Image (cartoon, rainbow, N blue to C red; front, side, top):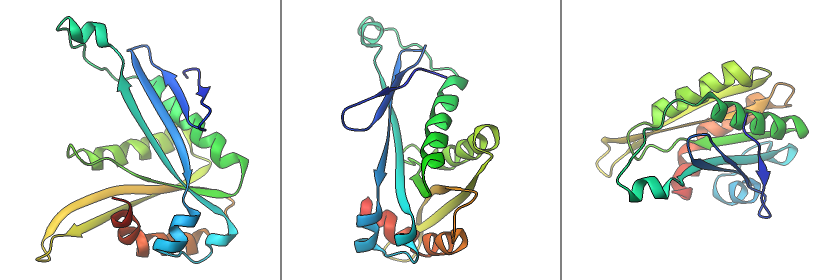
Length: 176
């Protein structure tokens, strides 16, 4: 696991051995969800969105025309899984996420979250959610992949999941 640094804005950052800087943060979505797509039971627990991204900080190498490959780094998954575990363990709350699909790899990212669940987050529930978005003619335009993590002892988890799945498209479209 990489050392984490808590930032003044509440986000976490860590540097990898490959020269990448990761930024991870949790955003409370309760207020937005109440306005956009109220969920039954939302007042019993907090719902957060989890986001992370990396910044390639290897400027000197790129300036010299060298573009080093990014290889599989298990410490990244261990670090992100640690954050998710700590976050869910501290209070009764759920964590939702949407996988970036801009490069056509959203489904792969959803599978990555599933692997993280199996290897690092087994004592929490993982529920994948896929949303098919149609164009104005009703034809399939794209599929958005995401999901939710929740504590195993979460009350009304079944209600939360049912409501999340029924409102997922509205939630996603209102954000993006």
